[in-house]
Image (cartoon, rainbow, N blue to C red):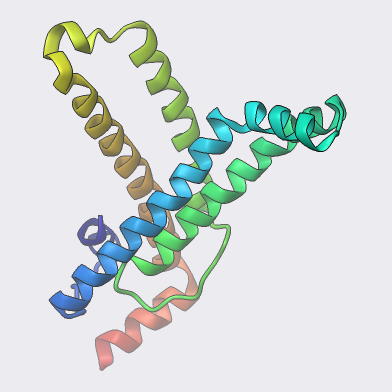
Amino acid sequence: LINAMNKAYGVQEGRPVWKLYIVSLLYTLGIAVMLFAVAGLMILGPQVMEWLAARIGFGDVFVTVWTWIRWPAIVLLLMLIVAIINYLMPDVKQEFRFITPGSAVAVIVWIAASIGFGLYVANFGNYDATYGSIGAIIILLFYFYISSAVLLLGVEMNAVIEHASEEGKNRGQKDAVS
């Protein structure tokens, strides 16, 4: 993903290999934690809040409010994940932007693709019969492939927008001169 993002911005990787491996490991762990949080909000959110509301003594209003708040929280967390990926992974100097056109499109397409892929796997795909127990690994790898393609779509959009902007054109001229 780092190499593909560098290609999207048209730069060569300039970080040392040892630093790249450490940074890649940290990115993977950090993004995995945030994605597990998003998955937890999507899957376990209502049940956990019902249990918590019953223990604390809150009524059904708390659970209803949480049901409505969790989707904006999920979208904001996904936007944060995509913003961090767009800022840290490519080897370019840029300022951190929480919301960009590419990240907004990536999050919307990622949510739609995740829902669509989940429906496909639940209703149409019979991977256990075809592949046996390795079917779950194949499904997970295919989902990672879809997620990477969606992230790269957002990065490509951001790179094109940056290269077309005055700031991006000026930065490209400075890089060509130096």
